[in-house]
Structure formats: structure tokens, C-alpha cells
Image (tube, rainbow, N blue to C red; front, side):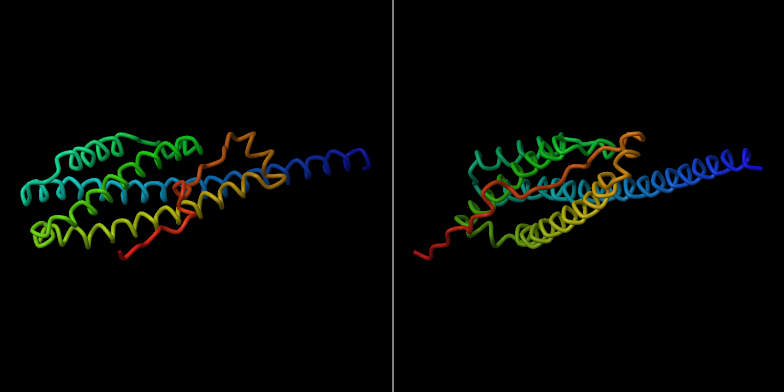
Amino acid sequence: MKKFLVPIVLLGLVGMIALWAMGFYNSVIGLQEDVAKQWSNVENAYQLRADKTKNLVEIVKGAADFEKETLTQVVEARAKATSVNVDAGDLSPEKIQAFQQAQDQFSGALSRLLVTVERYPELKAVKGFQDFQVQYEGMENRIGVERRKYNDVAREFNTRIKRFPGNMMAGFFGFSEKGYFEAQEGTENAPDISFE
């Protein structure tokens, strides 16, 4: 009877470890799918902004004798931002950073365009431009919300695969850390506001 007890105990331990490994794998797959879904939401928010910007450029071209250099910068930044694609299966910190840099350049070009427009009162009065300004603020808010949600699900995934003993299983199953969106450099400083 004793000689059967040891194999039964070992078999039970192997079974428990196998069940734990299956549970770990399945839970991480669920988290990985959450990350991929949220990444898609981030891309959709950025794509909406890129699509609407194409309309803005046409409105500005048609409404004013506008600074060609600023429009060219917006068009080029939009093209670059929409050309940087990151696969949801490979959301490494480096790829997220490259995506974010392209989007930040696009945001900067759009901001310069909106500031330059302040010098053109006839353009500010154009209904299409007024509508775009309201939509632009909403799009930027949506991008911020989607980025925050992405960071939340990426943090949950990264925490799960880094905790012991799951970190050993994560390496075995090939799960790797997902990157995060970070604040633009210099955003830790308050902007200077002057009414002079």
C-alpha cells in the first residue's frame, strides 16, 4: 500500500501544478486580449483625429489665404502619424514610444495650426472651423481617456506576468511586458501664461 501512496501523491502534485498552470495561462490570455482591445480603442481615437484633420485642412485652405508652411506641417505630421502602425501582439515599450512620438508631432502641428488661426478672424467665423474646434477638444479628451484605459489594462497584464510564481510561467509561455503611454517631455512644468 505504501508503494502506491508515493506515486499517487506525486501524480496529485503534478495534477495540481498543471491545473494552476492552465489557470494562469487562461487568465493571462484574457488580460492580453483586454490589452489588444484597448489598443484598438487608442488607435481608433487617433484615426478619428487624423480623419477629421484632413477636413480641417480643406476648410482652412478654402476659407483664408493661410500660411502655407503651417498647413504643410500639419499634412506631413498627419501622414507620419498615420503611417506608424503597432501590432497589438507586439506592444513593446519601444514600439509604444515610437507611436507616441509620431502622435505627439501631429498634436504639436495641430496646436500650431489652431494658434495661428487666431490671427485670422474671418476663419474663426467659418462654421466648419467652429465645429472642428469643438470636435477637436472632444477628440483630444477621448484620446486621453483611451490612453489612460490602455495604461490601466497594460499595468494589470504586466503585474500578472511579473508576480511570483507567475513570472516563471510567463517566460515559459512567452508572455512579455506591454509598453505604456507616457507624458510628453516638459509636461511636468506648468505653462507660462501672460496677459500682456
